[in-house]
Image 1 (cartoon, rainbow, N blue to C red):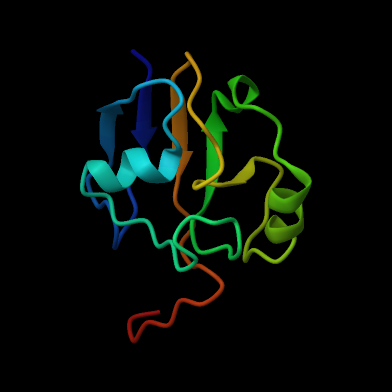
Image 2 (image 1 turned 90 degrees about the vertical axis):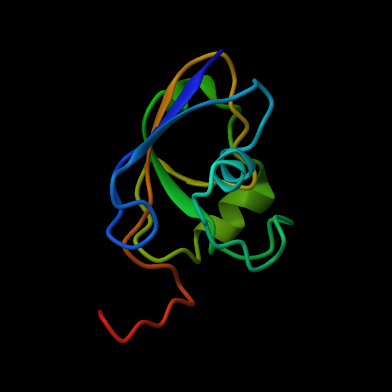
Length: 112
């Protein structure tokens, strides 16, 4: 069974996490099922960028993003070559290393 390794994130996952995932599960669903509260303002319908993540390792095992996902990613804060919408990226049979961005496009915080 593949694993997703979430790198530490100051607010969402301070210790980081390693979770086992069934192939075919989205990164977002896997995170939420394990208490990692990734934002998903559009209810995982590929209509926003709040679930944007960086797939630091293993991204080559994911299906290529759809045109809709690429269009939404163009609006994401901090876009990088390994950016994906976690609601669209489905785990295959390889482990992934995922980093959550410090901010999302609609995030407001008194601390930052």
